Image 1 (cartoon, rainbow, N blue to C red):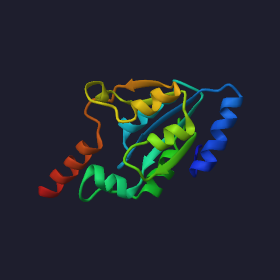
Image 2: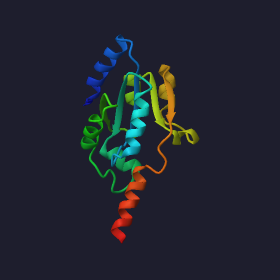
Image 3: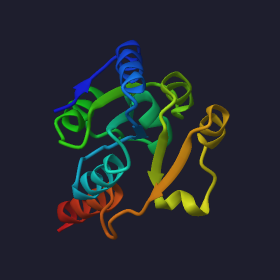
Image 4: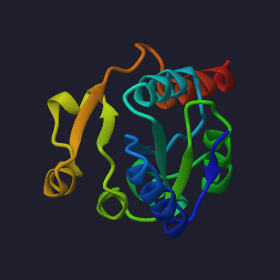
Length: 159
């Protein structure tokens, strides 16, 4: 089981992984309403290295990026749920709109994002390129997104 860490704690753990020659994989996102698509994505990401760190957008960042009414679940709860998943070694909550600062601080060997970034700019790519990391895109499970879960719940309330 992983842990929810402050950035300073994550940096110490990152350094111990580096010294041991272990590969750090990092991803980030909102992870609002955790579902099987998230788990599938995290399982695939964790298979790319020895430890998976997950950055979770804080509440204000999620509200800015996802719009009114979001997040549905507070960041501390989202982080705790993610840390309890087998593939996840550590979770760090961050307040910025991008994970650039986390990437610069942790310098993971592999930065993972969803396959939807194949057709659009990846905001963090320049940060990863600057320290020599590798970007990997992982396909999502079709028909499994937080937005689709929310839409389904809304349809239920209209019946």
